[in-house]
Length: 234
Image (cartoon, rainbow, N blue to C red; front, side, top):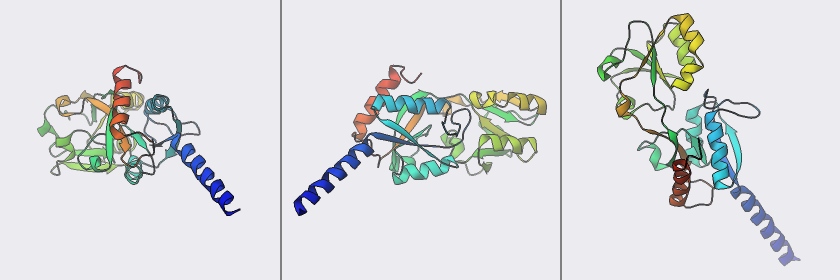
């Protein structure tokens, strides 16, 4: 009887582990147009995660988070396997590794009239809205001399810009498209940022080093990178 119970528990545990290994757990937050939280999340990064689950032959599960910073914390702890759109940094590389899934978006500056960012020195003395957990490019991210204000999201940053609380925000063209009408009505200035050479050229999945995908890190990187190179994520 004792042996039968042990055998039953062993089989139960094996079934649990196998079922868990079949999942790909992704943390998502509300970040239009990349991620929209709903009963059935959607957006360009959601589509990329769905494609990733097919590449890895896993069942995709979402953990919805109030913000991107919380997703990073969950990735660090191994509570989730992957976050889409995680830019590599030395600090993050202690708990994450990366594989690309698309070319990086260009950036646009939305600012009060009379403000243009053509050289890095143009950031000086401007009050800049910076979304929590978002990285733009290393020189900017690490520059503590700039007047950077942490904001919950780019959309909240836009509302602060309308209220004259900040001078500018940097957003992607995709995000810009969702705000075009409001920008035109507010008579704000939109200009390309002339600092593209300082930014990452790719957008990455960030995988937790504690992930439960059941693949060696190098094999996982190679598998996803090959899919990216073959255009599977487009």
